[in-house]
Image 1 (cartoon, rainbow, N blue to C red):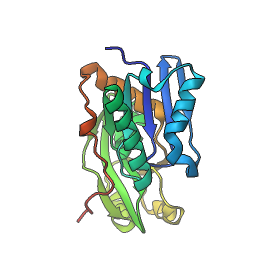
Image 2: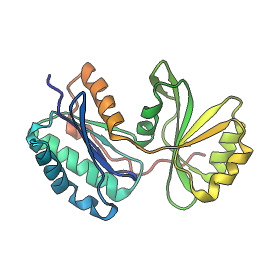
Image 3: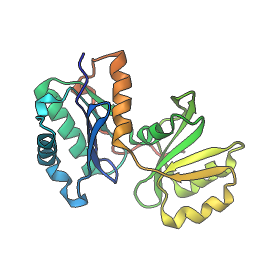
Image 4: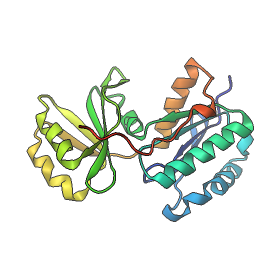
Length: 220
C-alpha cells in the first residue's frame, strides 16, 4: 500500500507536535502553542495547505495515546480517529513512554522512561534495547518519586533514565551512581519511523482499537 504522506500527532505531553512526512527527505513539523491545542484540526489543515496537500491525502496516522495530559491525549486521539474514520486510513497508537524510547534504538541498554504525573507521582516503564529492537520489560506504572528512586538505586548495572524529572527531584540522582539521566521528549519523526515499521507488517490498524490511556495502576 502507499504509505506517504504519514501524519504523526503528539499532544499527550509537551512539547506538542504535528509532523507530516511527504517523502524520505521532506518532513514538516509544527509545534502548537500551549493554549492553542484545541485548534489543532484547523492548524493541521493550514499546515497541509502549505505543502499543497489536503487531509484526505494522508495515508496513515500515528498518535501517542498516553500517559500525559488528559486534555492533550483526548484532543490527539479525537483528531486522529476522526481523520481515520472519515478517510478510512490506518491509525497506529503508541504509549507516550515507549515513544520516548524510540530515539535510542541505535544504542543498546536498559531504559527507564519517565514522565511526571500528578503531585509527586511519575508515569514509568522499563525497556531494553538490543540491535535496534525495543523490548518492553514492564507495563506502564505510576510510581511515587520515592518508589522511583528506590528502584533506580537498586540497579546493579547501568541504566538510562529518559524523559523528564521535576527539578525538585534532580538532586536524588546523586545517590544513583549507575543511572544516566537524559532529559528527553517525544519526536514526531520517530513516531513516523515507528508507523512505517508497523505498516511494513500490516495495513490493518482500525481506528476503533485506539484507546486513551489517561492513568495507570500504581506500583505496589
